[in-house]
Length: 175
Image 1: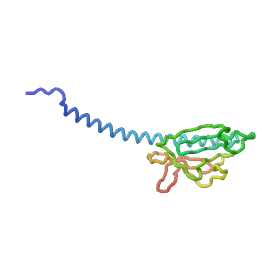
Image 2 (image 1 turned 45 degrees about the vertical axis):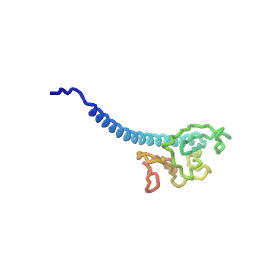
Image 3 (image 1 turned 90 degrees about the vertical axis):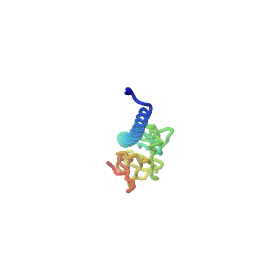
Image 4 (image 1 turned 90 degrees about the horizontal axis):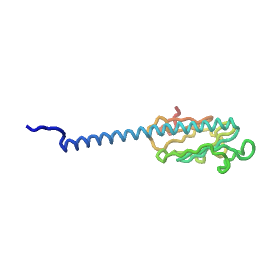
C-alpha cells in the first residue's frame, strides 16, 4: 500500500493554472470598476470646479474663464485692467485658479462651440469664448465608454450639471 502525503507535480500545476485564471478574471473586473469610479469622481470634481468658478464670478464681480482641451481644463479669474477686470482672457496676466490634467485614458470630447472654452460673466451667466450667450445645451463627455454613473457635463444655462451620456440620443442626461 502506497502512503500518499502531499500533491503530485501535475496536481500542483493544475491548481496554479486555476488560480491564475481566477486572478485574471478578477483583475479584469477590478479594472472596470476602477475606471467607473475614476470617471465618476473626475466628472463630479470638474462640475464642482465649474460651479465654484460661477459662484466666484458673481461674488467677486469678475469674469472667470474656462479653457478646455481633451486632456485638461484650466480656470482663470479676470484680474487685468480696471477694478473688475477687462473681460478678456490674458493667460500670462490673469490669475490661474486651477489647472487639472486629465489622463489620456479619460480624454474628453468637446463640442465645437466650446472648443475655445467658455466663460462665466460677472453675473454668473454662461457665454462662449466670443462673448455670446450659451442658449442651447452644450455637452462634453468622456470619449471612451466606461459605463460610469456620471460621464458627461451638460452646460444648461444658467449652470453646469453632471450626467450620463446617452449615445442613442447624442446628449448628456443630467442626474
